[in-house]
Image (cartoon, rainbow, N blue to C red; front, side, top):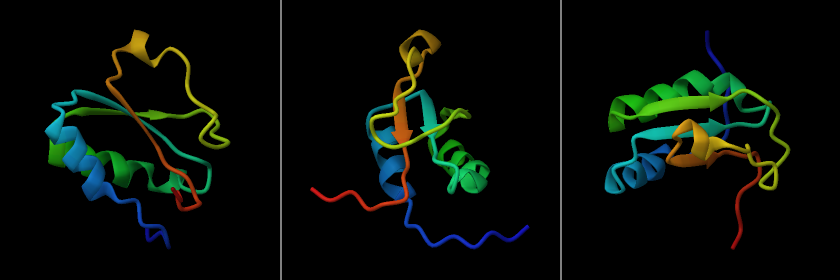
Length: 88
């Protein structure tokens, strides 16, 4: 299945950060428009980092919509993707 995707997910930066910080368990949170890329994102991270990646399947309405209780699940890092570029 071919998916047209016009976002730069900067997965190389995520992989570098995970390796540098020896992260073992990652949770990936995606808005509905990016969820079709979930398998690609998780496979890329897992294959390059050797860590476990979990997909947060619930809704994601922006940076303020954080999953609660990830620490109780043993998640070391939350990566939250969005549609709009982050400006700082």
